[in-house]
Each structure stands twice: as structure tokens, then as C-alpha cells.
Image 1 (tube, rainbow, N blue to C red):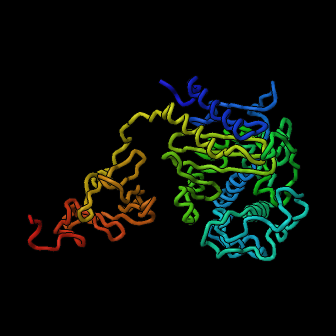
Image 2 (image 1 turned 120 degrees about the vertical axis):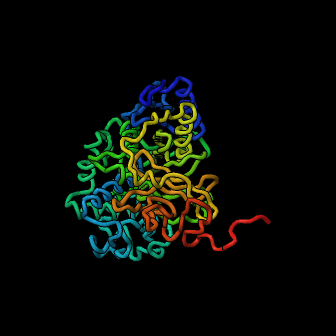
Image 3 (image 1 turned 30 degrees about the horizontal axis):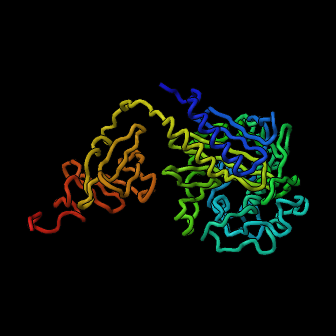
Length: 460
């Protein structure tokens, strides 16, 4: 039996190598490196390069562009978890005078603050950060292009603002806070704001000829929290494991789940494509899988980090070219290859440590009108309610300790499930946000939607 930390099977490794080889060749990338994580551990590294006798390993740095945003989001969530801010706080409360102060912290994280996608010209990715020394230089005279909170509009300046917020509340530069609070605790020793040898050079590849042009290396200055970082497949593999499971030294599993949860209103095109955005992480549905992570690009570099949470598989792909290989597709394919070739082995079933009588009493079949539902007591002490057949509203509920249960997700998130008893103490029905669930369809003894016709059920 295969355990999660065992090496991948030879056929799986060959399929992974084939996928990145095709990507490097067809995408005409000077080099392309990748890693796969399973069970919280890196289980495969691969590389393809145009230089004979040279294969970048998991310790060679590449620029990772907007994957930096996820690091910045983690810093902001740490501030929230420490009580130094609330995600619903307007920016003005903590960082006054930006011109975008009505936007909340959550809206900045989710790119729904209405800010412009880019800073004023010249293009910030290919010019020195010294041209934009202040926040005002990044935001421009009219920071808001859209009504706050109404739409998802990806914004690089928004993450510059979040970086400034971190600096304001920590009283230290963003890079110092990042190193002390994320890089050092997670052991990401090859992740840095400036390149540290060995590192790859960035190249532009001519669109109509197999010719190269070196890309300039610029320090992004104020824009650093949006895209400055350099990293390796080794470090990003460890970061991916953290984003899948959490680490109490940095951010709890519950808070990591929060940043992976959709937080932005979807455009019509996003709905069709199955994409969304959380609080610093991209979300997509591909090949029937829910994938989370982030992509990144800067002149000379492309990057992608993709996590299939349910499959417990993640992939990191880095390349040193301005355009060419579609790394998001490559990352998703690496996850798919492993998940399909070597499916995750489920944990053994085990009975509950303790059986809670109050929860067990609720278990079984219930009806909302004529819709049949099942309620189960789950191994984590929650209860789960969902339709017995087909699709429909389903959710888990957490006990509030007073006999009631709070919905945790979907339509019933935040709604109260309350068992209602008869005068003799027996269980009559469940009241879920005014919806009545009964043991029999349209129970005549229950309130609406209980039975209303005195003649009861009949034939036609």
C-alpha cells in the first residue's frame, strides 16, 4: 500500500516529465522547473532547459511575480487574527489619506475595492520603483475606477496599499515583517526580495524567431508587496503545503481556509470559466477539480502555484521567459496527473470517540415539505444536512452549546437550526431559519409547511 510520502511511481514521474517537456518546448522557454507536493511533502522535482548539461534544481531562484500577493495576504490575516484590525474596517481607519479610504481591508484583499489595475504610467514592472516613492504615486489622482465592493477588478496598487498597511501596523518594512513572520517560521530560506545566487536570468523570446532578449531587472520599490519576490520550487512547495494545511506558527488552518474561500463577486465571464478569487488566492474549477493558488508574471518570468485541496496534491511551475508556456494549465495538469494516476488513499473509517445523545437524536431522515433530507452526525462533532437524492442545499452545522446549531456554509451559513419539542419533551421538528423539517412529509402536527388539507394524502 502506498503512503502519502512515498515516491511517485515511475509511470507517474514520466508523465510529469513529459508534461513539462512539452510545455518548455512548445512554449519556447529558456528553462522551466516544476515540483509536486503530496501529503504535505515534495515528492517530485523536474526541470527542462535549453542549455546543454545544465538542469536547474529546486534551489535555483526565479522571480514569482504576483504569487507575492498571497504572502502579503497572509501577513494581513495575521494582523486580523491578532486583533489589530478587522477585515470589515475601512482602510481610512488604519491608513488615512490614501484617497481610497472607504474600501475595506477585505475588499482590498479580494480585489473588489474599485482600484485601478495598474499604477500611473510609466509601466511599473519595467521601470525603477524610485519613480513611485509614495503611495500617492502608486494610486494616482483618482484611485477609484469602480464603485467600492461592486465588482472584482484585479489591482496591483491594492496590494501595495496592503503592504503599506502591514508596515504601518508593524512599524517595520514589509520585507522585514515577511521574513520574520512567514519565511523564517516556514523555513523558506531561498525566498527573498532580491535575487540570491543561484538565480535564473529573465528573458524575452522573439514571437517570430528563436531569438532571446535579456529583460531588465527592476526593484519595484513601493510595489514590492504586489510582486517583488524571488523563490524556488523547493520553497514554494513548502509554501503550498502551508496553504493547504495551515501552520499555527504562521496562520491557522481555519484562517488559511478563509483566504482560499471565494470572496469576490464573479463577473459573467468568470462564472462561465469557473474562476473566482478569495482573500489573496485565485480559485478555479478545472477537470472537475477545485483548484486554488496564484499565478505570477514579471518581465522575464512566469510562475504558478496550484493546489488541489481534495486530492492533497499541489504543483509549482516556474519559467524564465516573459511569455510562452501557459503555466496555469501546466500546474493544473501536474495535479491531475498525480491525482488520477495515484488517487489519494482515504483515512480509515473510525467510530466517534464519544456519541453526543442530543446530536444522535437529530440523525436520520427529515422532510422539508416533500423534499427528503438526511441528517448525519460527522466524525468531527458536527452535523451535516443534505438532500437524499440529486442536488440541493446542504451544509454542516456546529453546536452552539445551548441545543441549537449554527450553519457553516452555503445557503445556511450563519442560519440557526433549532430543534423544537412537544409539551412532553419529544422532538417535533427542526426549525432552520423558518424552514420546518419534519419526520414525515407535510406532517399534520407541524407548523407551516405542515399538512393543511384535513383529508390528507389521496389518490387522483
